[in-house]
Length: 522
Image (cartoon, rainbow, N blue to C red; front, side, top):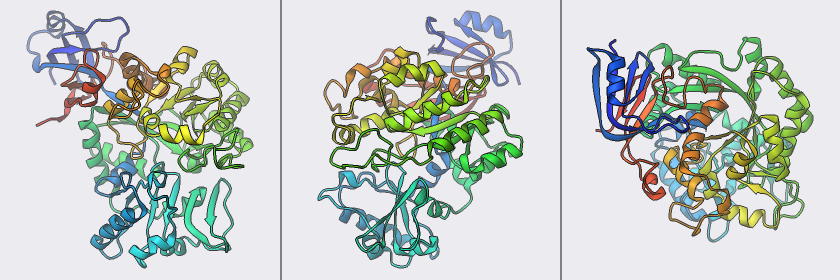
């Protein structure tokens, strides 16, 4: 393959203090020159292929630091209830989807949000039974931490009045002790294993094209071993176009250690990531672990999905085996205990531990997080989605919530992602949320807790180099410089020059991974 020169663009390299370049030269999968067109052509030599980017703005490939690509793949074409505003409307949509299912099919999707239903209503199995009959149906809510199951699904999972609550989970029950069909955290796990069908490799191929079209060239996948196996098959078949940093589920940690896996192992297309551990639940499910009760829910401090002593044991087991740890923590008590556990195991050279979401912290824990070198893997659109929930459920709490500015000021490394399919994986929506702290309709005016806003440059860095740093890949990707992987995107809007509203409407024109065009707008 000859050297290829990409020219006629405003190339934002991501290298601090460097002005935009005009051209880049690629040899194989790597950049060999970045600069003025004259400089790059001279470095490339005679006979280089020329690719004209037609004046587009160019950014390093965007990197989603927290995404469930298998769940996202399953969600494509599945039922999506996130915009439904009443129980009746939800049941009507579910009934329509059920009517179209083949015999023996499974209803995928969900994403219902009863916090927004008017009139207020609590979903239960009886309501779901009324439109699903004997077809087993289990639908995760919008944050993915609560499942709404019908009677047939509960029978399939062996859940009845005599089933005890598992550690780290709750089977919600009625006054007579019967399961209502609402399963929180670990109680939902038996049903989640049943909510998979079809060839995941084929579905991931469709999902990868969607992600490439959004400007994502790398992902940190949080899904299970079936997802890893599917990605390995795609790579071996030469069909993988997006780079994957693959987390290990906590339940598979011992087996992964026995296999000799360690963080960073692999190649530039698929590498082993950290082990993913849950510390608590989610705000919308009233199950994130708080130091004070939720407003209007006296006595409810959320759920410690993994008890503290078990966190320490898991962290130490993983670190001793050369596996980094990524811990889901949303509530302030969960974040505090996770930091305690990281501090308890001591420094682990060569491993970069993380907190996933890190949504609500005690202000004093920001500096502790920086001192311990723990990365904050966060999803900006969660902030703007949750504004009303935070204001209502955490009113009066002294918290640093979605404290991006506070974290950067304290020296915490930020890595941005989407948590798709909980949110849409569009990274430009994340950039907009990070710099405005408003919903996409511009509310609230001036932004929610605007002192925590970031500059566009800082937000882009968190979605490129910051995500690469979190994965220990900052020497391979995240900026456009000689020796780095040739992963970049050409877009129709220059985020460094245009307004946040314009950035929100950005269209990706070309996505290049490893020097090859992997997706192009027709």
